[in-house]
Image (cartoon, rainbow, N blue to C red):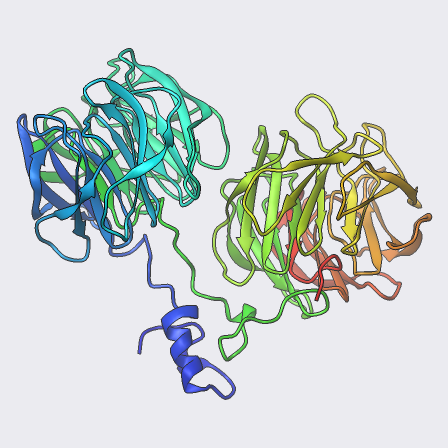
Length: 633
């Protein structure tokens, strides 16, 4: 019997046979992994004539390539992508431009088979994929085009139109995360430094992402689920440079190290989630390796079976493939059925990001109804602090923040499966120090600092649907770092920095749009930085700064009026991650940097009690939960 989580021989209670089977085949085990037995293949190339050779490496062990088989037609300057099971070679130069798409199965060896055709024959194109979709971008037909073709990797057939890149190019480079694709550089015929991005779940045209460090073409690229790395290129002054960007955060590429000496033009690259591999370029058989998560220089990995250039590379473990962690037993019942979520029953709180010191990307979770230390959940798309959190019964969202630049993008997680966060969309404007709250369907983000001033903008989102924020209205004050909560109908926001210190509480009606309305005042003017702090009847404002305080106030959300004293936190702190299950509210971390988690029983009054510890000390993390008072049962 294959491994499953929880294991049959370690589970408690009475299991039904069909539950065991379901747990093994679907819910309990995620067999795809991009850190283990991953194959990287190089397909075709010029040597200097066109080649049909397919080589492969096992990415876990440095060494020379082994023969895999042959393409249907010898070609170079081709592109493509790969899923967990299939690798594709699209287009290329035969020596005329071709529209052929070949495919192979990573798990076996043998010759490539016909998959279908591109919308037009072209070469000098770039390719990328996630596990579902492969995009072929730009190229020569013989003129330069900005065409993007798409195929579904699991289904044989011809490509269809996806959209257009911003600029018609040849010899650009492409890499994808599970949700976002990137095209960098290229030749127009002059070399360019622009970077485009594409949302893979939809169709549409390229959008500006940022710029390379220098105008460049013919780079090798590879990546993890969060980072793209680009090596070398045609420009003689920078052909040994390695640069990087973060998929989730628009901006310019930054220096990341150097390749081995010599040209790295037309090398092409691929990866598993940890290690990137790329060909040295020119007519060479050298393959270099680079650790994706950290800066530093490339080192030797091994050699291709035949020296060649412009051979397409892909793998069954690259960063565009979404991998899953095995399920956490803390999140599931013994039968493999998910613990119920929603107000009164949801019990999972997740904290993400923060600062201590440096920008953290780690997420951890607690079971709110018990006591104990937090456990690892996964990672955000990149390290950040000062982000708000909002959540439904199934999905948690961490929005914007700073890393260190102020950002607008939003990550999301699914409570029922531990793992890394994915891109959700963007706020209407860059901001940090904002706070958020939600009900079962709608998330609300208000205020924040946009890099030059505090703002009063309020955005809203439909949590079940990926996409960007929409304008809701304005807060009564332009401010950051306030406390917030909802009862599903009304959202309340109190305190904050204006840049002075505010005691104002205001509210909005969540199902509509419009500006904030005065609710009352806190007992103490302060800034806090927390969200969804309360039950379906009460909202809590805990701790804060002006100066540092441990005071907890409460309000009755359905009415208006001034806040009332509730009790005190165990320590004076601000900028905490909040998790609530409608009965109990927890406050984790905070400034000054601490790992302390406190909790209170929302329906009573009294001082907070120690809950346990976060995985590390931090302040300004975001917090979400699947049972807070804004949710419906």
